[in-house]
Length: 109
Image (cartoon, rainbow, N blue to C red; front, side):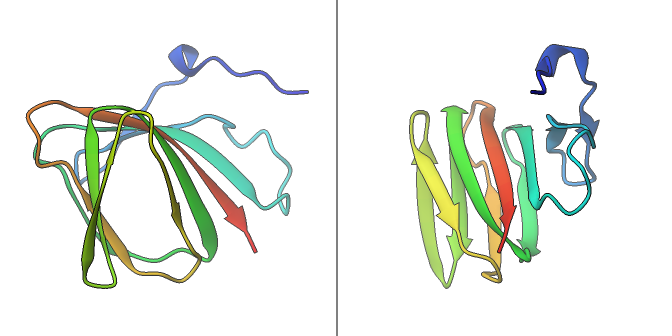
């Protein structure tokens, strides 16, 4: 069993402004196919379009995140969960006044 404290792991702030914390910190063996993290989207954050080779699952802890996929904008607020299938190009953004926080997981197919 592995137990990690988010507060003991320094986040990495990406060029798009999202603060990412790798909750598993490379502790899961290579090839296990699962990654999990915590992300904070400050107001005004725009994440450029991307696609993953993994299915992406998220649970919104606070605030609201919008995600454009397939020409449709989806809104997810605190208490909601999202799923983005592997290969689907998507872009996320926070156009609200408050930061948004979520836990995400990438699961290889």
